[in-house]
Image 1: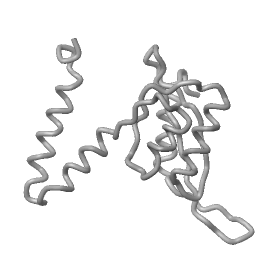
Image 2 (image 1 turned 90 degrees about the vertical axis):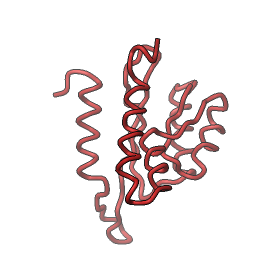
Image 3 (image 1 turned 30 degrees about the horizontal axis):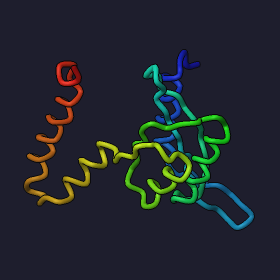
Image 4 (image 1 turned 180 degrees about the vertical axis):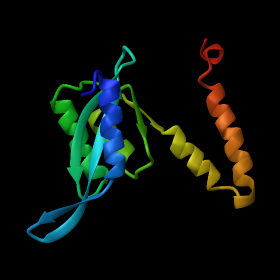
Length: 143
């Protein structure tokens, strides 16, 4: 049994990664579904699992419903939403949380950057981007 929310989140995420898509029997046959998680970091820097949703596919409409659900359950404000680049997701966030700042996840920014260079140069660029990413989180940089 997990002792705190960080351990619980790690357990849930590792379980979900092993079962990213799972088959579900319905009256229309067998379909693939996924579990989607919303994780938050509160003002005390603690991670919180905001919810889990099961859906056959992910899209802006799905996330608009998720965000509306979170709002209805008492999540009044989001300061920063870190997203994966799904088309329509920033608009869905803006609709429910108009003051939220939306930014592309660092991993997705790196992938996007690497897609713009030749295979031959990717390893070099990836190493440089990793170094930049590491420097951004050093205490002296944040001071």
